[in-house]
Image (cartoon, rainbow, N blue to C red; front, side, top):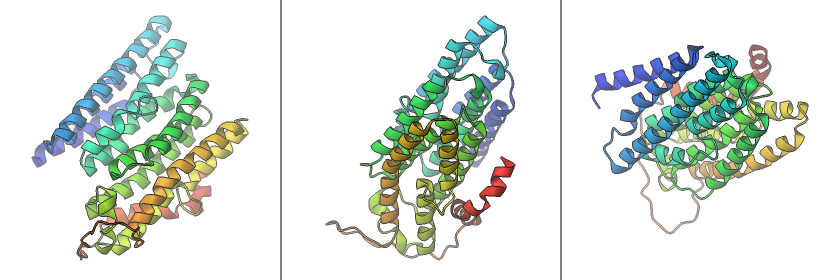
Length: 346
């Protein structure tokens, strides 16, 4: 792609995100979401492969429907209350429609079907933007309207997302699809705590963004797209793959690593809110996603599982690891001891 065109699309993404995050009026928030959608489409379809074109079409149709629902919910609210302010969303029907629209934007169950397909059809760098930056504006809208949303509906969506995100990722061999289902199950954790402690949702989102960025950039460096190539990637950059192993386990939420922090805080907050059954259920459902993270980690390290097909080992690269990956993997693995400081900031 032409570098100038690339620059225009990336700038438009930043502009759309900034407009949505900083707006008070529903029409401005909707405008930002539309700019974002239109700016990411060329980045998804830049490879001219039929799968990429299909992914861009699916993405456009889903996001257009979700944006229409956002507009519809805000207009219904304005009709009944005379308020266009985002924080003044009080009409119950508007709240339900908005929850559905944002769930569609984010890829929460049952509106998740587009996300794995779109991620599979996109390049790794675009997949990274779709999994992280594109989810920030809808998360901001949820954060601003959290006080008026329906807790029962969000809890059901969250538990279904954690269940299906873990369950459907079990038999995947394409790494981008596995990361898409991982994203869906993480969104479940964010949605369940949104009503009770919105700041925890944002903390979870930020940490998820850091860990996912580290994984995507590492995979982009080693040029790995499926499990069979991941099996022999350790010969190319052993130290990078060791860090990938730890980052994957951190994404799974295992204790001494960063990913354990949001899960621990969310379970603690749910227990305080007398939602121990929901906390137990979502914790058990996260074991499903732990399985495919462990499988990825198993394939990442030197332990080659027994298989009949022969794979060529890759040449070791002398290219130094980029500073961004070094910083992100360190943060993804070692942030848990700093949790008291993070909690004082939050």
